[in-house]
Length: 142
Image 1 (tube, rainbow, N blue to C red):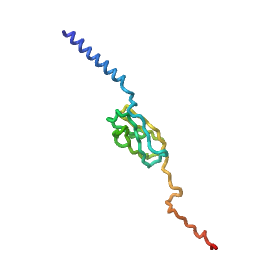
Image 2 (cartoon, helix red, strand yellow):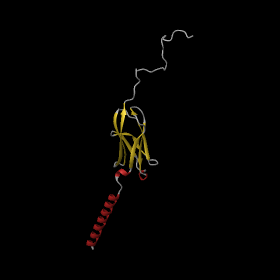
Image 3 (cartoon, helix red, strand yellow):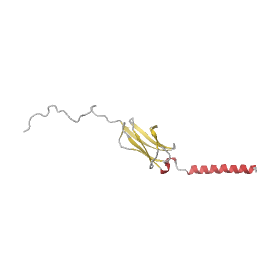
Image 4 (tube, helix red, strand yellow):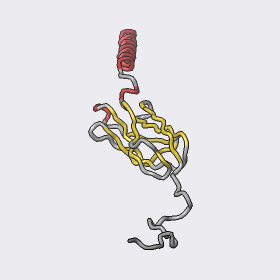
């Protein structure tokens, strides 16, 4: 009788292992959760805010999305709404920025953005919009 119970227990463990393996093999690829990541704008500059959007599959709304800039987390993890997760990003340095959207550690997409220094005002000062012609227009008309 004990031999029969041991065999039955062994069969149960083997069956469970086979089912678990089948589930793992049949699972969708990890990248199926985050479909893509985009950054608003076309010319990116230091100190300007942009919207970063991750497009995710409709089945992954339960998992928050974490955004990073060159490995540094941007804000708190974001909930998914209507297949999208968005966050505001303001670059603080010029150069290449790898923006990554990560969902549940294993699903991620990246986009690389080039950020330029913030343009400076030539001449170094604010302009009032008017000019002093210093007497250049003298004479009479007529």
